Image (cartoon, rainbow, N blue to C red):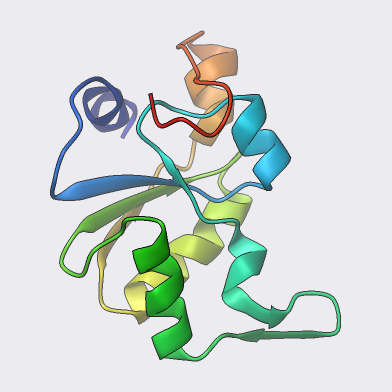
Length: 123
């Protein structure tokens, strides 16, 4: 999966989207080039008091607001795969072709020393 994520970070694809599932601060501190941000807790009605999924139409709106279109393939990641598994599940639930980069940012930047992008910019 690391090789696929490398290709996606170097050569953006119209058919596949990288999705960073971490909190916004972690995303802005450094994310994989080209990744959009969908913090996993944004998919819940009330993450602290009522942790149930938003209705499907609201989940689709959330994804669309981040530039994720129906029919695209999603590759989720986070720190070590835990938060990414939630967005992976949501993507599958909504009918997306989804995969999870389970090594996530740990494998990307800590083990392989690959570059990250700071801020909210995709590149």
